[in-house]
Amino acid sequence: MKSASVESILVKAQKMCEQRAVRLTPQRQQVLRLMAEQKNAISAYDLLDLLRVSEPQAKPPTVYRALDFLMEQGFIHKIESTNSYVVCHHVGEPLHTSALFICDSCGQVTEHHADGIDQLLKALAFKTGFVIQHSVLETHGTCSNCTK
Ligand SMILES: [Zn+2]
Ligand SMILES: [Zn+2]
Image 1 (spheres, rainbow, N blue to C red):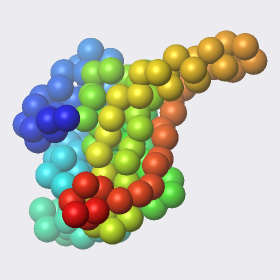
Image 2: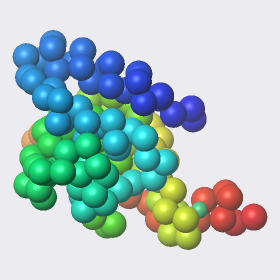
Image 3: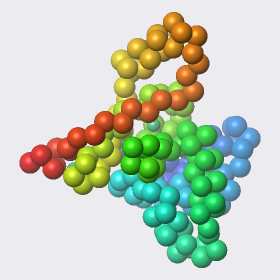
Image 4: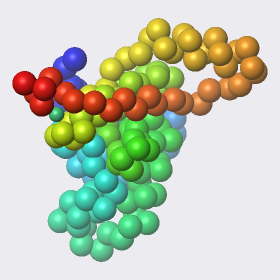
């Protein structure tokens, strides 16, 4: 899987915000840019440190509000098990189920489409009358670099 470039992620996000009539403020955009530049998932506090380079006034709520917005728009995913965040590499496909493979040795996170699982979840939800908003599968293990 080839990762989308930082610029293409930002351009897509900008376009989608315009379509949805929501505002990608410079601050939100900066948070998304910083995240897109990361190879791995990042915690809110590490993100705050990076944001403070360009915005020394930034406080934790600044980052959390931006993260909430970006999650609502489906631009990033939260990894609950490691309490960190990662840019979605399938921006523009809002209702996908993403399978996140998390390497416990180096922290690398890769996102994969999980179409079969998608169907399964949809079928289960349909049976029980449940309406899925989003789903993230977190799978821990060792990446190919670390198993060498
Ligand atoms: Zn995704
Ligand atoms: Zn690894």
